[in-house]
Length: 294
Image (cartoon, rainbow, N blue to C red; front, top):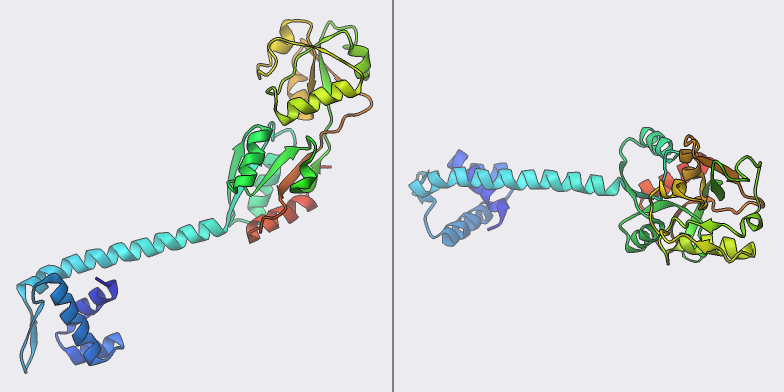
C-alpha cells in the first residue's frame, strides 16, 4: 500500500468530508475517492460508511487510525535517517595511516582539518603499507599517508607531506653508536633485523637499500616480527624510518644513527589516479598540500 494513501485516509478521517479533505490535500475529489476505495479493497474491510448526507468511520476505520499513524511515523523516521546517512556519506573522509602518525604531524593535521571543515566525518585506519594500498584500490579508503616504497607513481596521485629517510638502530655499546652518521658498507659484517614482513613492499625496500650498498647481510632469524625488544637482545641492527627512530630515542639501550648518503622514504598523501574524489576529499587533499610538513 502506498504511504501517501495513509495520509489521505487520516485527513479524511479527521474531516469526515470528501470535498473538504480533497481540498486540504490538494487533489481532486474523484482521486481521493478512488484511493480510499483501493485501500478498502486491499485491506478487505470498509473504512467508512457513506450516505448522501455524511460519512462516518467504521469500527475498522477507527482501529486503522493508530496503525496508519505508526506506519507514517516510521516512514518519516526512516526518511530523516536516510537524509542523515546521505549527509554523512557526502562528508565522510576515510584516511589510512601507516605507522606513528603522531611523529609525522598527521594527528595534528587531521584535528586542524576538522576545525577547518567541521562537517567532515573523519575515519582513520592504521594498517601496514600493503594492506593500506589494497584498501585504497578497493575504495574503502579515500586517501592514505604512506611512505614511498617505489612504483607508487604508476597508480597514485602523490602529494608530498613529510621528508623521511632511513636511520640505523644500534646497540648502545656498538662501536659506531656515537658516530655522527654511518655508511651501510661499514656494517657489512653485522646481522640485520628486518622489521617488515617478508615479501612486503617495505621489506623489499630495506633489502634493496642493503644490496645497493654492496651488502649481502646476515638476517636475524626473528625477522618479520614487530617486537621492538628484539633490537635490544643481541648484536643485531635495524633500518628504521623517522617515526620509529623518534620513538626509540628515549631507549638507553639503543643508538639512532643517520645513514649517509640518505635513503629517502618520504611520506606522501596518496589516492588512486582514476578515482573521482568527493568534495570533502578534494578539500582535504588541497588542505594537506598547503599545510604539509616537508
